[in-house]
Length: 615
Image (cartoon, rainbow, N blue to C red):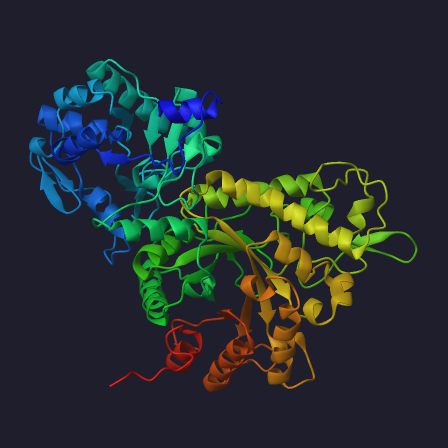
C-alpha cells in the first residue's frame, strides 16, 4: 500500500503489470501456507482480519453464526432460504466458517500477526469487527450483508434510521481499528469490506473514521492508483492456473458480449393480503424464473393495481407515497439468491400519484392551450413535470429510498411513462421552472422535441444519482429505459414522445425497446413490423448490442394471451434478423402464461438455433 500511496501522490510510479495480493478473514492458513511463500518470493500482501472473530475465539466466547453461513451460501447462489437471522449458538471457541467449524486453531494469533507485520511483507487491514455476517433486512426475515442492510426489528416493525445505521458502521470500524492498533502497535489504513458490500455511504463513513483505502469484491474495474481510494478486486478461487488468471484479467479489461434474456415481472400479481398466499406466489415465481434460465428480471417496485401505469403506492419504505406492502426487498433477494438472476428495479420516472391532490396538480405536466393559457395534462399517465425542482427532489428521494432499502439491486429499468407530447410541458414557462441538469432558469419555454428528450434524460440522471448513492459498488449498476417503437420506425415521432433511439443508446446501458406490434397499432403484419424494427435499430452504432427487444405476450386490445407458438416464432425471427437481446412482458407465473415450453424455446440461448447432439 506504500507503493500505491506513493503512486497516487506522484512520487514514484508503480511497475508495469503491478499486482496487489490480498487475503481475507484472518485464517491460520495464511500464516502457515501463504506467509512462507511471500518470504520465498519476496512478495508483499495485504492481510484483512475480522477482528471480532479473532477476539471471540481468543476469549472463548460462543457466537451466533447461522445467519453468516446462510448469507455466504446465498451470495454463492445457493438455493437455501435465508429466512431468519436468529442464529444457532456454536460451542465456545468455535465459529462456523463456510460450512465448517473453526476454533481458535483455525485463526491467526496476534503474535503471528505481529511477526508477519514486522517482516515488512504483510500489511494488516481491517475486515471490520462484526460486519462479516448477515442481519435481518426485511419483515420476512431475509438476512443480508450487515454493512449495507438497514436492520429490521420485528418487535417494533421498524428499520433502523439513517443516524443509527451510520453510527453502527462508524462504531464497528473504530472498534476494529482500535483492536488492531492495540495488538500490533499500528493503526490500519485500509478497509476490506466483507462480501464486497459497500456503497457511497459506507465509503464516506470509512473516510470519516480515517481510513485511506477501501476494497470491495467483484468490481469489474482494473484499478489504477488514481481510481482509488476505493478499489475493485478480482476474486481468485479454486487454485487457478496462470492461464485461468490471465483469462480473468482479459475478461475484466474487455468483457465478452452477453446476450440479454429478461422477463418483466409484476409484484402486483404476487401481492395478496394473506402472507401465506404471497409465499406460495413467490415460490411459483422463483420456480418459473429459474426454469426459464433467463439472466435478468425487471421487477416492479411500484403498485399499480388498476393498471393505469401511475404509481399510487410503492413496494418499499419511502417518505413520499404510501407503501402497499414491504415486498420489494424480499422478492429481489430471493430472485438473486434462489433463481440466480440479476434484478433491475422497474420504476416510473414521472408517473407518481401524490397523496396531496393540490400538490399533485401544482407539479403535474401541463398542456399548452391555443389562447396562451395551460391546463393540467389529463392523459394515460399522470406525470410530474421534469422542469419543477420540487418534482426533481421528490423523485430523487424515491429512487434513493428504493436503493437504501434494497442496496443489492443490479440496476433500474425506467418505466415507459417518461414522455412528453408535442403540446407538453407548459410547466417550462413557470417562474419556478429549471433545466434538470444545471438548475438554470428556462428563459425560452418554446422547447424543441430534442430539448425535451434531453431534459427527460437529465431528469432521470438526477433521480438515478439518488439510487447510485446506496447501491452496492461491487455490483455493476446498470440502467435500462423503455422506448416506444414508434420513434424508431418514424424518427419524426420524437415530437410526440420526446424520445429518440440515438440519445438513448448514447446514455443508457440498455434500451428496452417495446417491440409490441399490437400495442403500436400497426396495420402491417406483425412479422413484417418486427423485421422493419430490427432493421431500423441496426442502422445505429451498437444499436443491436444495446437494444433489448421486449415482446408482448398479451394483446391488451383483444384482452387475450398471444398464442405461445407465435410468440416463440417471433423470438426466433428476431434472432434470425440480428437481434441479440430479448425480453417479454407480461408473465403470469401463477397460471403459467405464456406457456412454458414454447416460451423457453424462444428465450433460451441453448435451444435456438437448434443444435443436434452428436452421437
